[in-house]
Length: 108
Image (cartoon, rainbow, N blue to C red; front, top):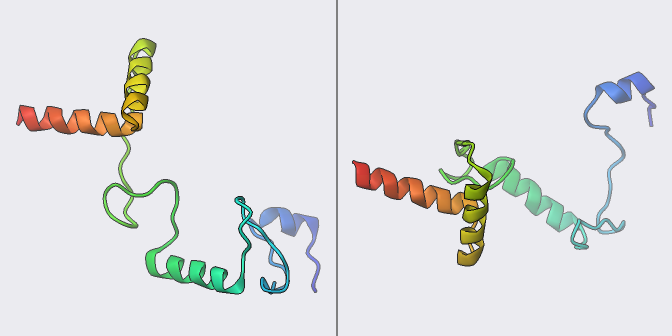
C-alpha cells in the first residue's frame, strides 16, 4: 500500500484504505448493529437512488431542501412554546409551522 505524506493526509477529507469484507470483519454502528456486505450494498443503493441525506428529512419533498426561518423571541415565550410542545407530544418547530399556517389561512 502506498503511503501518503502527512501534508497529503491533512489536505484530504477522506483517507482511502484497503477494501473491507464486512461479512468477515465486525464493524458496528452507533446502535450496536453490525454492518454486513448486504447492509452496505442496500445503503449504497438507497443513496444512488435518492441522493445522500443531509440533516433532517425534508418537509418539502424527498431530496429537496426545506427552507428555514429564524426568529428571536423573549425567553418566557420560548419557555411557553417548549412546554406546550412537550404537553402535546410535538416539537416546537411543528407548533410554529401549525401557527403560521393557521395565521396565513385566516389572513388571506
